[in-house]
Length: 439
Image 1 (cartoon, one colour):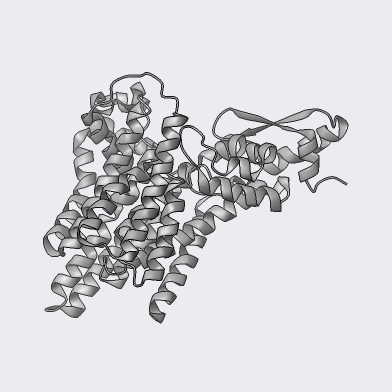
Image 2 (cartoon, helix red, strand yellow):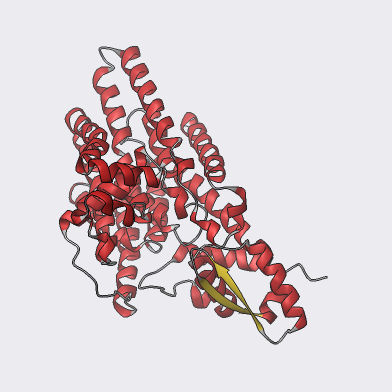
């Protein structure tokens, strides 16, 4: 038990530091998308109680609302996004530590559990826009919700605790709907208090999301038809290929030159890993792996279906057309988390299968191979550029706002957030009241 806590703390520290270092320092001070125009602005103008369960774009964003309330009320306005970045980095570390705990009894080899807990920071495409902002915190919540649904709590108290965390995660990520089949299937063979608590938290959270979706539906533009082939190819292009090569331009060249062949090569290691786990592992581990792979495919497919853009018709692109289409969608980063989970499952199953006959050799070979693969994937991260470079530093914007507002206190100031052109206004009264830059 004590060793488990030591590993958990170690994972938390490593992932927190690693996540912090993945984004260039200047980008820590850039407000991203909804972090400004929704979470900051609405918190200032409407307050915590009015916004905490207020739906946006058809669903709930509980944790971003909660965290933004704390940051806005406790941190000076000019430090808002540095605080946001710090909170998100710590949350990534906590997600990793939670993953280590949740894999207890599922991944039966401790290095395999550690490897699984590093996945929330290892996926290269996370650097593009997911790391360090509230707007994409839901990606980690889907990962948490899935693992909580699969977990085997050691006690009733732990089960209730995970049930509460499942509720919070599901109130943050609408695609946690995909976790519902997992908890329902589990209830067929295990109706212990911990499993019931987790199922209750999941179902209440997802039910609230569905109520929000029905009463304040997300505007869905009419677009082209997205078929199953588009989803499959898009999943391979955006979720699988960037794991092995984080450089977007290089991937475009590879797709233009080799087409489906490069995609087949990219997915092959995961197919082999999944087969190894399915052949050598036990029934529950097979169920868990299949559930995670289902979430990977379904979450990516769902994202395309609610955004039916012509550029998402991936199955029809050939040759030079690949230079003109998006192949680094953030939807792919979320899906990649669950694809990458196949590797720790395979590592653990191979060790458990062969260690009785070859205890030292099996552990050593699998550990070395796992380290090499993780290291290779990790070095792809710097190849993915952060999209936050598109906006001005937040602290500089607030400095300009204070100067302008002192000259005209009754007016407002227009701020910008990344990516692209996203503008929002704050009244000068709020700017001057919440900034510590005034002389």
